Image 1 (spheres, chains in turn cyan, brown):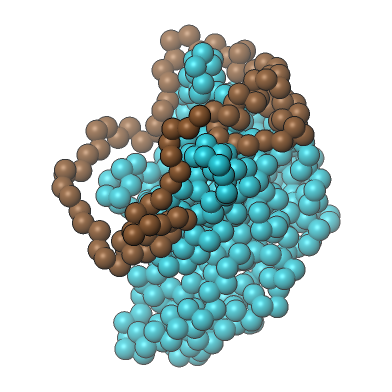
Image 2 (image 1 turned 45 degrees about the vertical axis):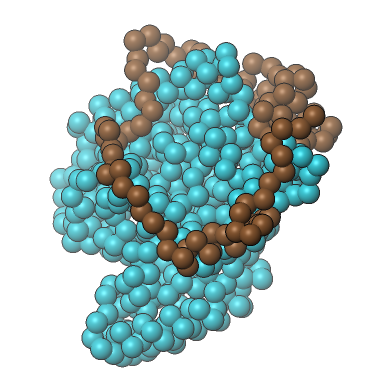
Length: 475
Length: 98
């Protein structure tokens, strides 16, 4: 096995035993990036020099016996997450020259353990998309089939882990941006509950839905990363003070007797493909072999989740995108007056999809339409939340497909806005409800494309979700 | 809900986005399609339902009203990001114009 193919657990053991150094491990990842990134386009910026320097520091720490969980382990982060002194474009040309003067809390936590950053990964600009085709740095290709999308918006982070360019990566999930690319690339990815991980330093899209979470080669690694990432942060007032369980210990518990809800509505959602349905259904039936009790449940309001999402998100989004105007940082266009500078900088620096969402949001929030759109959507959102709350009174987790279809061809849905929005149809409900969702590989289609199983839990119920995901992977 | 070109031009102006003629036509069509999809919410009875604006249940999260200074290094980095800079001040065009 090549070093870059290791999991966190395996890499930790090898480093601590002195089987290889962090420099060896980091070079293996960088070599893989140099060999494959030209084809996959997972990275916008590769921080090769800095990575080697950080690996050398990590090796010193390991030699002194001071290694922590992530010391010396190479990782990548989505470009829409700020890392101090590193270019952070977020996938949009309006920030093409932006060197972040500060660092996000989750990345600080990971780096303070001595993890080695190998680069910033490609994504749909500022999180806008489900295919990575909305990146102004070109689409990310799926490692399973280079003519297909890696999913989005955190497509680069998913492809980088799937193609062994790093050991783990970090992404963001607003409507499905961790779970969907994890599913399409055949890896594990967790959207934590809203408020569980600090979003300080994450470029914001929809403030009432945005979350930040890990991608890894298995659920055990996801749990290990959540041990490091989770917790309250005084720089993010939406983080909660609830105690953080030791996820990596929790996952070892038996799932025997666990009640798992199977909501029929997910399998009837618009665009659900038969082959995906069959693969996921088979996996769900197999859960019985783990001693899990399957329970039929009903979530009648989830079919409205995409409609709610495409009002709430663009509305919050249009105000968040307001800060990107080319005045205080980023790329400023030439203009004859201030209005002209704003309008031209934004026209040139945003891709089509960002403009589209800004306009939907601007319209939905404009005088006379607020009640009909935003307020109405917020009320339907309450009904979706209540749906989940009612079901979680009788089950521990809910299982469903992560995506209605496997990776599609690049360009296939690009001109059909609604078809692209419906790619999030299985992930939006959990997003709108603020609950955690984990995607784990569930099997491959006849064409060899990965399909993901989505495991959802009640708010702050990550432990049970990870427990079930882990049980599936070790069975 | 269908939008016309004049409405889309107005929205673009409010959103500070310079759009070409072709883009206006494209967005008029696409925004109408998206709003048409969203119309499905009309079939939901929301009588007496509270709005959800956040899901954490947190209330009145405040911090002490203390001035926190910015170190020189960070200040320098922030200033370096200014697209137009004049003696460490952000330079912008006049706010009021004809």
